[in-house]
Amino acid sequence: LGEIALMERIHERLEASPSPEVWSGDDAALVEVSGARLLFTIDALIEGIDFDLSYSRGADVGFKAIAVSVSDVAAMGGRPSRAVAALVLRPDTRVEFVDELVTGMNESCSTWGLGLAGGDISGGAEISLSVAMIGALTGAPVLRSGARAGDAICVTGRLGGAAGGLAALRAGRGSSSAGVKALVRRHLRPEARLEEAVLLADLAPSAMIDVSDGLVVDLWRVMEASGTGCEIDEGGVPRDPGLDEVVDLIDPLEAALIGGDDYELLLAIDESRLDDAVSSLSGIDAELTRIGTVTDGARTIGGRPIDLWREKAWEHLRGR
Amino acid sequence: LGEIALMERIHERLEASPSPEVWSGDDAALVEVSGARLLFTIDALIEGIDFDLSYSRGADVGFKAIAVSVSDVAAMGGRPSRAVAALVLRPDTRVEFVDELVTGMNESCSTWGLGLAGGDISGGAEISLSVAMIGALTGAPVLRSGARAGDAICVTGRLGGAAGGLAALRAGRGSSSAGVKALVRRHLRPEARLEEAVLLADLAPSAMIDVSDGLVVDLWRVMEASGTGCEIDEGGVPRDPGLDEVVDLIDPLEAALIGGDDYELLLAIDESRLDDAVSSLSGIDAELTRIGTVTDGARTIGGRPIDLWREKAWEHLRGR
Image 1 (cartoon, each protein chain N blue to C red):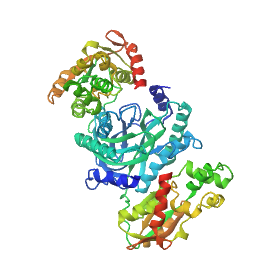
Image 2 (cartoon, each protein chain N blue to C red):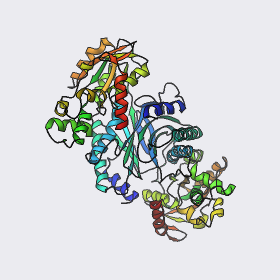
Image 3 (cartoon, rainbow over the protein chains, first blue to last red):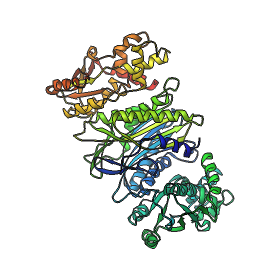
Image 4 (cartoon, chains in turn blue, cyan):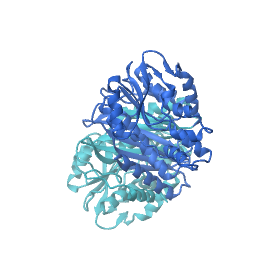
């Protein structure tokens, strides 16, 4: 069974959430504890799957473990507040690796203004780092399920960079130029789009998600949750310019559509607020690009069914 | 480096917590988010270390993963509210195992009145289940650091049962009698002492901890945090009566002092409130036994330095 099918199977077996809480099925759970509305999320990074110690340093792993949960909280319209981490170490793990890992987590926490409040250490056969995070919500949460026909579909930044960086690392070309180094940095040290998310949440987007498993997969999740279709302009998807330097290793369009790990934001927003959204982000030197429209019909990219890309995306995720 | 030394090393490298929060160094972190005072904890169960699939079923693993975090929240004087889980599965893990695991988590959540709000699934070389939990705090938190000379040192229930159960399972005698089955249940399906903790927290104990790594190790943690000594009456430590049936496998005193995984509560409380504490627990058919006294002097068990037992306890933890 694949991860998606398994998630659905588990989802069916879980208790329903009491209103107004939203438990599984979004970037983070929305919960109420002691009168406070909180976001709550957990993510695990596993050696050999999410990071490879032949090119990731301990500090990269620590930085990324925090960043991916910050990205989840941000995509819900919240601000990260506190994290706890469960670290599994191999018997032969050097203590310097652990020092680096903590340094990376600290750096990431300081970048996004949260506190690492505790943790747990265990031994195991492979290194893993699970981070759970509590986020604070000041306005309404932005769910995946609110997209409506007619909404503009937009992404922040450029896509495909992380996949390009990983391809360069695997080919032993991670340091070949400044452009390639920038790609590699996107893979090793992903940036959560927190300030972008805070500004966008103020403009009440209908739906938002972070692009962690690739544009096609995460777009499909929003469309499923919202029960809508979409028309995506394939040529309008903003591609990381650094991809031009690794065209022999990875197809730039493929990297942008199914690459994953970019942690940009994908959102649906009423057309009437699109200009405000673009100018709001340009105020912090960030880009917002419209890539399509929510519809009541089929889900298409470049006029062809999204399923053609989805097959490829699942394959890519399985092979990761 | 051992787990304890590594924890201390990491602790030194973490940011200090802003008052009145208490980050690492206790059963759970005390944090403030959106005006709410919360408890926040994470624990990982790893295949081959924390559970063995030759005798733990998926439902046992799921039940225990929730129970150990409930126990951490309880030992701080809080009530568990919401949990999220990060599950790592082997490529050959059967879907029925995952179904069982979810059943066990649901059963545990229902037992202690909390909600499983979300999670994450990854692939890996070994199965693990990390659970993060948010607890609500109604009164003052009970830390490890408040024990004062003269306080009575007490434990709930009986100790050593989980270690006896594990010994019986390893010897292939897990079903040999009703008494042994009860021991095995203590290992596979630990009970968090939540109602006991709620009643005890009302009586303002000076310090409290759950006995997860064994009495000697957890007692030592309280003494270290409080900067005190102790005199423990070795013969007064309540032993699980089922241990009498496995004396050929494990020494009952050793099981009670260093066995671990019993999830009873260990506390220091002003002598003047000891009788109230005992009668409060007897109201829910629970036992509270005084096992010693907090002192300004050395740490002793049965008149001998606690270090003699600590050496043995570390060895036991490392070999687990």
